[in-house]
Image 1: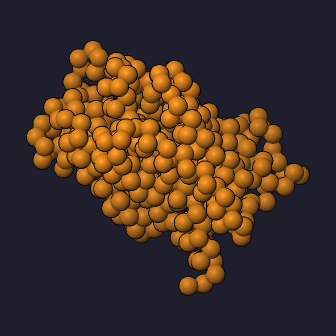
Image 2: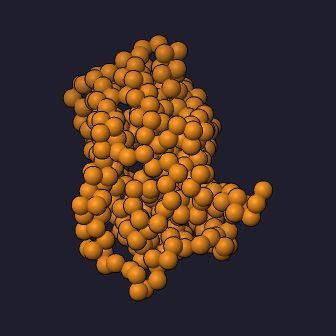
Image 3: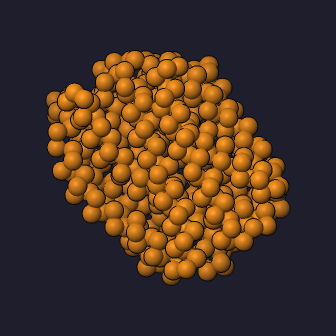
Length: 400
């Protein structure tokens, strides 16, 4: 293995474990919401707002930290966002009511929302073009690892020891920030961090929407909104949906853990296909699979159908996420890459605000799970349409 490949794999591992810890928190939140409903006697609307407030924080974090990454450098911002996330997780264990918990979820969301686009941008800029798509999708696969860990913790820890013990585990990731700093010493920063080449915040935003990048920006904003809206609306409610369908808490967590395992082959298959077939066809195919199995899962009744369709939904949805993270930074030049990627992710988080809250509102008004998941199916199809008509293929593109 040559020196460049070794550096790429080291960066993948360093950034990937940060991604895994973030995913563990998001995954645990879906289980914690269910536990809090019983502990604090929350309504469906209040449960929905827990997920939505997290997405508000992610929207703010993606925008602010994405722009800061173009001015201060990717590496330092990556570490700062991990600290935001870890501190918020630790403080959330002190919550005795909903209000303080929501404030901490905003802080956690800000760190998480900033870390994801900055990490994918940093990795994209340090990987050879012929391997870039695959490496970024593999970076995303650490998200599945985090969800699997969260499902195991939720199944075996939360019912016995409570959600606070589980949250303490995510807070300990602050220690990892030290190792991350050491692990990225030989990772290069783009030349844009030099003061003479920096753009102001407003100039960067204006450039993202300039005529040269308007079409790809519109495509990305539609894509991110529909994918994030559907993902957080479906997956943050997944354990609760299983309870609504008649399963007890322990069995619901176990079934969701099985569904979560399907995320890994979803990522790995997308990572293999992305450099074979290109970004657009793989992204469109996995989004179509997401739409189909969202509809089938929402209307399933038996255990076998729910677990099967839920696993396939996880497979295609998380594979699509991986390709989307690889595809997004490739749309912009280095000078605005952090800003463009962060803005797209930030706009997408608006969907993450709307999705969980909408599910809570619809359930409280006796709308069936089948009808709710049909809404997510339609949303994903809008994303497919945007990529098909507005997206360009970026396979093998050299980033400037």
